Length: 328
Image (spheres, rainbow, N blue to C red):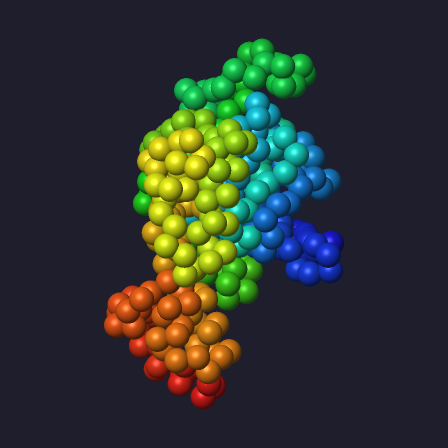
């Protein structure tokens, strides 16, 4: 952990390799902002001195999917381009099925309820915001709710998680935030401005949310999606069909497709296309196999179909990509 002024940088390692990085900023007393980068499949829930008293988190997934294993034993997945608000902490860990995730996270702690200066200047009411966003979709988990919570505090009285799929009103602001981070332009005042804009939009109630539990999965459903992913990607030459895989699990193909999309954030066909492109790139750069041989290895019987798909995805033919990669 490295601390510099208002910044805390946490680098996570797994078996000696880089598993992820969290860069945390204090926006104002009680409100923390984090940039998250993850390169592993599972991470324990993060607890720091700054986040120990967290009452709510706001997450936006820029890429990949993030799974929250909730207190009632369900998996709730946040997909790329979605915004999640939750006043429940994961039961024990966060899950990243594709072992690749990036996003932003805002932690709101109890101290924010007492701090009035900047939030009131922007006309932000934390309690009103959380109540408006969360109360309509509360999940009955009274046994896990803190006994110390005041009955008439104006806050939602139960734990819940909600997700917004249409965040067009946030899009430019989120893109600006991610660009600042990628270019290492870490101007704290700009970050504050963008954060308060997001919180003001949520306070205004202009974003529609659905309960995260509408698409939540059981452990067995998640395992089915993961098993399907292993079967489909372990041998890209395989002609295994979704119907056959689903039948072997005793479920319909439609159900398996729905589980897969929830866990991996993409349709099976889109996911496999990316895997085939990635594997083809490795073979084009690292081997002297012919284009036809590579096409066959990634699941194409026809070189022309492989070339068309590769060109549509990359903007270069396989031959041009190989030449370009080897000349640099």
